Image 1 (cartoon, rainbow, N blue to C red):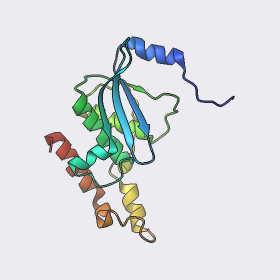
Image 2 (cartoon, one colour):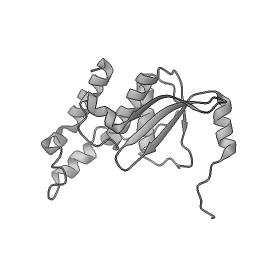
Image 3 (tube, rainbow, N blue to C red):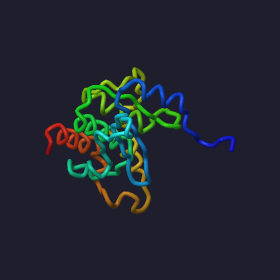
Image 4 (tube, rainbow, N blue to C red):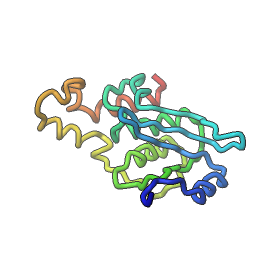
Length: 169
């Protein structure tokens, strides 16, 4: 199995030896899930976790796995975890431009968590869902029927949700 994704134990050991809590971010079919995990000899301890569905409590009525949601997940994770610093544990993934992991890190960074990365590559247009809004305008059929015309104002919805997270609503 030449291309099998296997754990790089040297890199993992470096992360663990640092003593810094790790940000573990994964994407499922329906959601982005982010954890802050701290190493313990008895086994890793999850300090905090946020899923895309958690954003609904704050007024987010869109997908839980897009760039905007990833940022909001990161911001909420920073707030819930109370950690001052964290380091990304990307596993075997290669970070590509506009990776959802960057948006989670940016959200955490904007909350005030030192995420140990000087190079968080995000696109402001994607952050505010402009790519989705422009696609919506050229839609065919009922693809966006669940969110209707709200998608035209996704930036406004994003800002409302972020304010609700900040205010704990």
